[in-house]
Image (cartoon, rainbow, N blue to C red):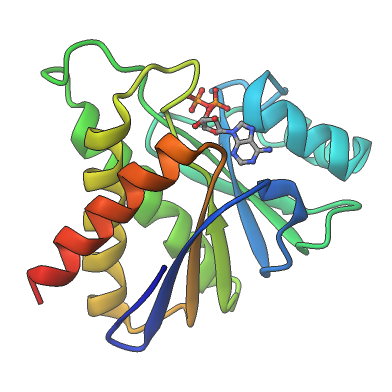
Length: 179
Ligand code: ADP
């Protein structure tokens, strides 16, 4: 599925983020930036020890913020590490923090002149964010950012399950209707 917002193509695919060939992939990291399970573990396994070596120098990352490292052995040249909110009940600032993850990651991409970025479904694994709600926040945040900045050229969401692909597809269709 693909929709153009302003000058930016937004694509949704089902697949494995570690195989992406965009300029950067976004990691759903934890605050230590020292590795974890899920997509974080997969990125470090596929990208090799260089990523962790750079992460160690960054001193962690706050929830809703984003920091850049090399992509190591990944096809993507860079990893943008962001920390999603742990979902409690949706009443503890989770939507604003999840939106911030997407917008701060895109800020970092633009600061480094990157033209294409791939995101996973941040916070929807161990952090427990309901897929439908996360999808709505993620697509809404990306839409707002790219309409304002007219960059990057390509944003992809790489969803790891049919359910995630379905949720993000429905949210993208909804955001497109707002145009
Ligand atoms: P969080 O702690 O932010 O919830 P997780 O890594 O536990 O992060 O999960 C985030 C999402 O990433 C989940 O939807 C999970 O299914 C997905 N995921 C796990 N491995 C991969 C992968 N290799 N590529 C893309 N998505 C992945």
